[in-house]
Image (cartoon, rainbow, N blue to C red; front, side):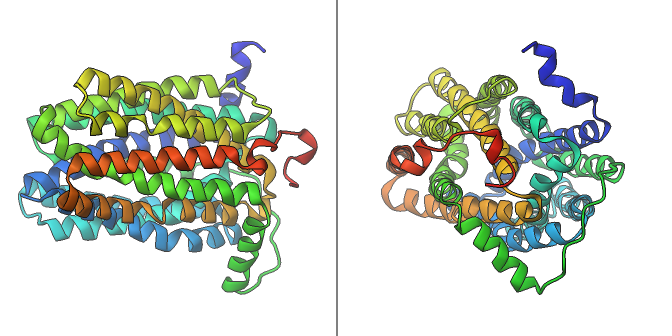
Length: 409
């Protein structure tokens, strides 16, 4: 296969618009990962309050994501995504104004993060379902990989720029950039012209939700991976909640932490580039292996490793993350029929992130009780054990890609 073949999907107008809008939006989001945590710290918040504010953004996502799957399968996925972007312009823009003017309080940040999270819960299942509407099945892997490349580039530039802005001006300006990126995303999505979808017979909301659950539950390879994601994301909450505090106390502050996250982004960029060409015969074995590697930075942060070693571990974690995500999304999109895709995806999002807010909040509480470094070691141990358990399951080891199975499995 020639290298150019991997980028043929960029010739498709609708994919270019989708790619551009979401690439810019994700760039802003990666700035907020740094900016919001340090906004809380600079307002005098403790590590527990950092975790609680971050959790406030994720909890509403969990509450709305299942509804988002039903709505996206019933209506225009593009329209759902535009509406979610408009809501996030308002919430992030308000947060930026409060921080820049010095009127912000921690509870306000938590409330506005919750609005953003709720809108994201509606956006994500629609996004997963929209991609197969604008590209054919055989181009899903490179399309997902290219989107991952954009995310990876944002992982490099977003945290680094946010660290500089926080240090030089304030966290509010980084969040203002995020609000602007949602506006660009909404414009790009409004310009999409996906083909008309067949309208399915209407049932009640609960019936549609239950039908999605049956489609999800009946595929053991889907729900076992999602259970692993649930455990992994809960433990990763320790990195998000405690990492900024460790950076502020021991590593040199926001700029250093932004550099570590940027190293993860460089690794993610490398992993995404590999994913544009990769066609694994056993995609779930690759996924389980990569997600085991993903947890390495937790151990290095727990061990008090020097910043260069921490950055190297973050680099390899980024490779594992984006390679695994690209393969997983493509596998879902190829093997789940279109009429169920957003709902099955919503259960994926729900299961994957239901425990992330708990992990954020619990990490801060545990750190106060047993210490930051012991909490980080505990998180690493749980994540590593769950990855090993996933790899041991026959449904994961025996799952193979087969063109005959695509879209009907």
